[in-house]
Length: 135
View 1 (cartoon, rainbow, N blue to C red):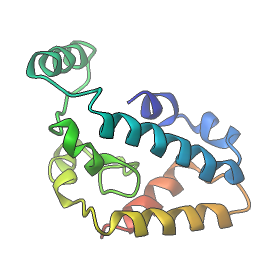
View 2: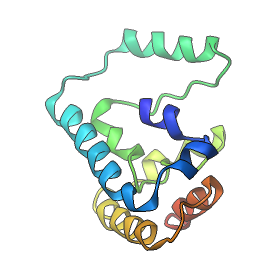
View 3: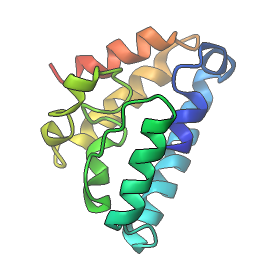
């Protein structure tokens, strides 16, 4: 969530990040996610999840619980819920549409596309590109 909150929806941040640096940054983020997913250090429990949902709600946002930590891969890069700017209603089925077998190949095609760009794309272009893999 820190990664998404830091960059997601911030056009100036997107534009300041050179396209040739994306593969390394994404690889670092993937390694971070894998470390904590595989180690079990962040195992979720019901009470902390309820507290987090309440805090999000009290902040004026609609909380959405996508499930257990073991299923967090369903909202990682190259999945239907990641960087696709879905509405609250569209988000519901997106994690379940994730395909663990196909996700690595989709991610690789996305990275190849990003690396081929001569300039940092606008957020809308990233969202459209991400959505195009799941139609």
